[in-house]
Image (cartoon, helix red, strand yellow):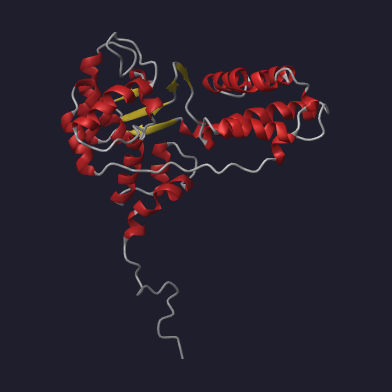
Length: 297
């Protein structure tokens, strides 16, 4: 197993971003090799793999276990290509049902309350999140060189998670985001606070944040408590932006998908259909889509 685990990691070194590679390495080191490392890969059966998965499901969510399973499948696939095994045991397992996260966007009055209550750099951080729909990892990785106040646009090309900075989540996530009028004062205020620092947002020591989780555990949790709002993920800033852009009826679905970094509008339709303004209007029963009114006998 160890031999093919190494082969798998070597093959992924050039095809995955650094943080994903580190994640795979951690999964192998802590959850795969301790169980299967001493066993010849040809001797592992479906029942062995199923027990491994069931044990993980007692500790982690189905979404997390599915990620672990992807890594193990990749290792077995290397052995399959070598004809060391005749089939991939993972393929025999039932698919895990992963629950989609429940989207709970903030209402406009809640956003206003939060921005009225927040202070300093965190106020500007929140404004950026609510008004651009950027992912939280993208916000902490944002550098001033990628903020163009003259052209009124932000170039999103990086993300920062668990201390590792790399490219964005997907290729389509590399994008330009327009800076709306109401966001300009917040960015100007932040520029005065951060001065000549490389990153838009820095910690109390003037250094880039390790990742967004520190902000989520401290400032974000505190602001919701101070505003007496139910706890929601900081990621809901992105969903709030998407929802309100859709409800405004001022932008096409393709435009909004581009701002959010989606390749196609499919994700918008899957998550936000109920918030698209056209979907919320009463169905017009009088429209004659074919121009055949009065033609019936």
